[in-house]
Length: 191
Image (cartoon, rainbow, N blue to C red; front, side):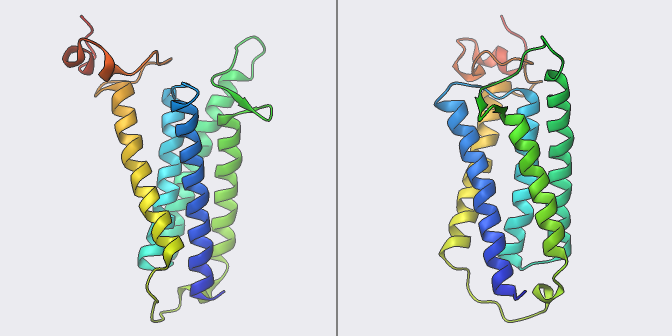
């Protein structure tokens, strides 16, 4: 695998992570389905995996970048499995909307598993790590990285809006920043 093919595959991988994060925001903003604390942690797992992909695009492919992707995806798998196990018991209900009969945490488990498998496969091709003169980043990798950074910032803002600087509510009822008592609710002390 050539370094250019590796860069293309990493760019497509980052586009996939960007798509997952965009769809999570669509669910949050359009369908008003606020993320629970476990959902926020799953988004953090996607951010960590996306960070490894972005590093591959900006600095060139390295095994350590794939390691970041795998660690982020493994953390996401753990959180996804935890959430699935919370809702697998009959009568315990579920959290959020279902898409094609699977909830978002089940889709997250599938996506994290694909990231781990994809990273492991990419690590099999040593030629991509050869030191070569790198071309300038093309439109797709630059667009994917810019969108990724924007989504990371949006996720941080969204999490602060939902949780403030304290612990996130188990079942979020709204955005704390829209409360009348902003200064006190941000500290976790409602009036």
